[in-house]
Length: 326
Image 1 (cartoon, rainbow, N blue to C red):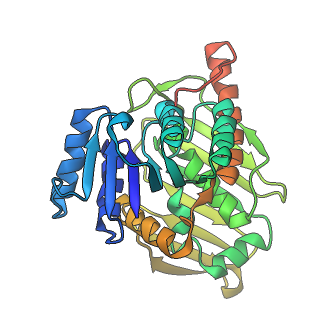
Image 2 (image 1 turned 90 degrees about the horizontal axis):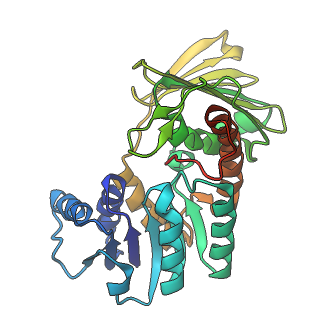
C-alpha cells in the first residue's frame, strides 16, 4: 500500500508513526511546505526505530516533485484553512482510491459541498477522522442497543476543551450511537465573545451548544472557560446513566433495574499513532477505513458550521462566509 500524507505537523507526524508501523505500507510520501515539519516527521520515525532515509519514505515541500501517479490512501492532516487546496491539488495530480480527512473538515458550507463533488467526480472514497466511533467501548453491541432503542440525552462537560475545534467529535459519536444525524442546533447559550485559539489566526468559543435529533435525542456541549475541570461524557438512556471519563480511563454505569447499582470498568483511549496503524490495516482487509463516510460527516459538519456561524455573525455584527476554526 502506498500512502500520501499531506501535513507533517504535530498531528500529521503522529499519523506517520502509525502508518509506518503497518508492514503493508510499502511507500509513504510526506508533503509539507515547511522543512521544520518534515524534520519533525523524520524525528518521529527515528523515535520508533525507523530510518527516515530508507527508500520506504519520501519527503517533499511540493506535490510537483512527487513522481507517483497514484496512491492507495491520502491522509490530509493540514489545518481546515488549507485542506481544500491540498485536497484539490492531490486529486488533480494523482489517482487516489481513498482519502482520510482530518476534522474540522472545512471552514464553510460551500467548501463542504465542493469537496464532496470533487471526491465523487474523482471516484475517491472519502472518510473523516472522527475515531471515537471506532473505540471498542463506544461501539459495544449492548450500548448500541440501549442508545438506539429510545431517545438519549448526552452532556459533554469540562473546562476549556476547545469547543470550536472538538465539538465535531461528539456530534459524530452521538450520530453513530443513534444511527442518524442531528437536525437542529442552537448557539443561544454561548458566551457573547470570541476567544483566541491555541492555533494562531483561529477562534474559540465557550459556553453551551445544543443539538437535537429527530427522535428527541439531545447533545449538550459545555466548555467552561478559565477552569481546568476534566471532561466528562454523561449519557442518560431509558434504562441507565453512563458516565465516561476518558482522562481517567473509566466508564461508570448506573442501572435502573439493579436499584441504581453502579458498575465500573476501565477503558483505554488509543493514541493517534495506534489509530492510524489500525486504519491502514483495516483498509487493506476491508476496503474501507471504518470511519465516518464523507457524505455523513458533511451533513454533521454542515449543521455545526451553520450553528456556529450564527454565533460568529452576532459577535462580529455581520454574516461570515467562512469561520476561522480548525
